[in-house]
Each structure stands twice: as C-alpha cells, then as structure tokens.
Amino acid sequence: MKKLLLIGEKINESLSPEMHNAALKHLGLDADYRYELFPVKRENFDAEMKKLKSDKDLAGFNVTMPYKTDILKFVDETDSFTRKCGACNYVKVEKGLWSGKNTDGYGFIMPLAKRNIAVKGSTVLFFGAGGAARAAILQCINNGCEQIIVINRTPERAVNLRKQILTATGLEPNNFLIYTYNELKNNELRCIILDEGVISIRDLIAVSRVIVNATPVFAEGGDLPFDFPPEIFNKNQVIYDISYCDNVKSGLFKSAKDSGCLLLRGHEMLAYQGFMSFFSWTSKKPPISIFMNAAEKK
Ligand code: NAP
Image (cartoon, rainbow, N blue to C red; front, side):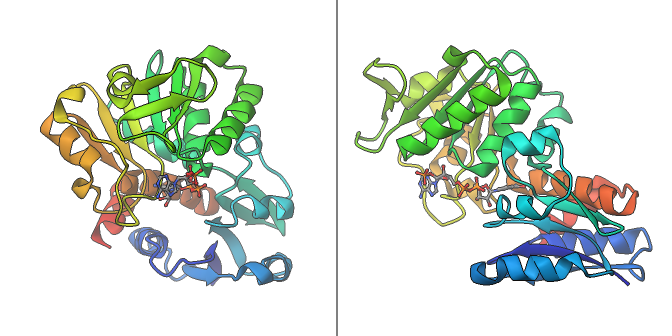
C-alpha cells in the first residue's frame, strides 16, 4: 500500500483526507493508496522529514501550515512559480526524489476560469497579505490582471509582499497598491506607498472586479473591521473567500449577496488544488465533483 500524507501542525479538522480517499475509492485505487494525516510538532519537523526521506512506501504528500516554506529545504526539485511563492503545498515522491510544487495559484484561479471570469485587464483586491494571498496574486498577474490592491492589518507584511512580487513579476509599481487600516477608524484606509491621505473602502471596492478575503478572520468567527453597505457592490463583481467556513455570516458576504454578486468559497479552491496534487501522484484525473462534494460534505 502506497502512502499519501497531509503534513501540518493542527490538521485534525482538515478536509483533505475526505477528498483524496473519496477520489481513490471512485477510481478503485483504494487498495493501492491510502491518504492519512501526518501531524508534526514544530520542534520535530526537520527530524520527521529526514525520516520520511527514506520511507519507501511514500508516494507523495500535501503540506499545510506552518510548513509550506520549511518543506522547501527538503525538496530536490521545484518550478519557478513555487520559488516565487516561496512556499510549496504538495510533493510527489518518485524513486526517492522529492518534487515540490505550489498549486494554490491554480486552485485560486480555476473557480473563476470555469465560470469564464477572466482577471485579464482587471483590478483584484485582496484582504490579507500572507502566503495564500501571495500565490493567488502571482497567479492573477500571470493571467494578465492589470492592478492589485492589498489591504492588510500590518503594514510591514504588505510592504514585503509588494516588494517581492514586483521583483518576481516586473509588474508596474503603480499597479500594486497597498493599504492599511490599523490606526484608522472603520471605513477609512491609508495608502502605505503613496501619501494620498485616507481613502474609503467604498472607492477601492468600486474599481475592483474580484474582491478576495485571504485572511482567516471569518474562519476564526470574526469579521473584517469595515462596514460594507450593499450599495457599494455591483452584480458584476465576484466576492471570493478562500478560507473554509460559513462565511455567509460575514458582513462582506451578506452585503455582496444582497447586491447580486457572485460568491465563491475556499472549498472550491481547495478542491482544485487537491485535484492537481492527486493527478500528479496517481496520473489519474477523477471528476472534480468528487473533491468538491467531499469538501462540502465535511
Ligand atoms: P498567513 O500566511 O498566516 O496570512 C494570514 C493573513 O491574514 C495575514 O495577512 C494577516 O494579517 C491576516 N490576518 C490574520 N488574522 C487576521 C485578523 N484577525 N484580522 C485581519 N487580518 C488578519 O495565512 P495564509 O496561508 O495566507 O492563509 C490565509 C487563509 O487562507 C486561511 O484561512 C487559510 O486556511 C486559507 N487558505 C485556503 C486555501 C484553499 O485552498 N482554499 C489555501 C491556502 C490557504 P497580518 O499581517 O496583519 O497578521
């Protein structure tokens, strides 16, 4: 029996085993492979990875928080997108060689692409400037997105993200705007790179085609600290929460729903990135609905 794993720290609630084992069963591969959780404490990470390197039954694994960057020092080969992301979310193991890639960008763009929503020439706004935002932004730029707006609680993280992405992509600096709201009241934001005073969330939403929550705030039972009156949205906009939760309770989703916007949830992104790692391990393509249903059911 070949082993497939999810390596992470707090992974008990993960949707991945449900998805991958459903796909293995669907294809009649459940006697050949088994997908299991592999929780690792931070202090044991290096030692555990060294042990896994000699595991002859290991066919591949997904990597999640907080190890998406740490795993890179153990992979033998990767690609340029993954290097730009500085993070890897799956590894294929073949004859002991670890090939690590990042499919968060692919997972992010597919739910849009399958609905014929192209980001080419558009503005995409992100709440959050972490690892998932980085992969999604790089993918948007690859797909011809014209302008990126990032709103982040901590200015330094947004500044670093912008610097790295501009270097990696050659995007025109004026087309990557970053805002913070830490010291300001509700709906006012401060642009970090330009001294243009404060701007309202309404004005930033107005120019954006896709508005993405790339923070865990809804999943943690909280909400973004802005008012989102329904009239600030229009029905051509897409509101995309990449976390996995009941986001319909958030102010952003409630108002966007009232305005007729398309709402997308993180389960779909997870299904697509999972599908891609599954294909790489098994060379088989199960229907995406298997991943989608398993993620939604759980
Ligand atoms: P990360 O690297 O830790 O970054 C988290 C980001 O969220 C940071 O910009 C942080 O801002 C911001 N943030 C955290 N708590 C916040 C709060 N209470 N209020 C406002 N901003 C807050 O995490 P990540 O890997 O990017 O993951 C972000 C989310 O995406 C998670 O919910 C994760 O589960 C989800 N995700 C989904 C998929 C998928 O396939 N659907 C894939 C990857 C990740 P500061 O800089 O101010 O701390």
